[in-house]
Length: 155
Image (tube, rainbow, N blue to C red; front, side):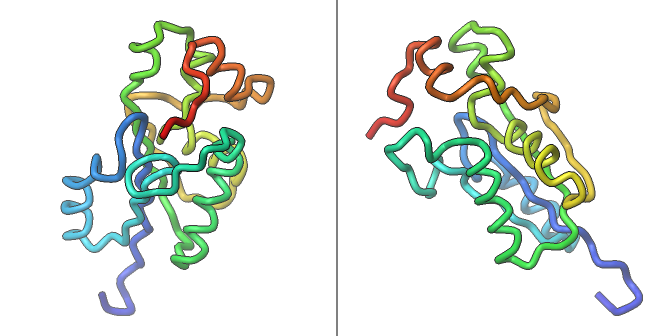
């Protein structure tokens, strides 16, 4: 790129439950050829990421802080977030959307990033699952007990 061309924003792709960063391989190839900087992490507990045994480590605010730190380390200033989910948790558990929104996935993390850091991002794309409003009264433990998948983290 020459100095007169505008810089392209970084695209942050966030996979959904139960996939990992490989979900985005075709999009990565396409956008890389167009010159976009890309960040495509495995979210905590998925793929090659850490898999803490303590469910408290999966709190959405902490996951969002991890994503923010990743952007800082990568010096990504102008970022568009793309989140995806398959809504598998609703299909598996047959529960209401309020429970579905507590399962950690790309769209939910993207929603919280929008809420926690409103001026930090250029834009958001939510694929398959829309933006969800914060629900601080629901904890991961409450959801796990209701859907019968406690403990959340297994070896």
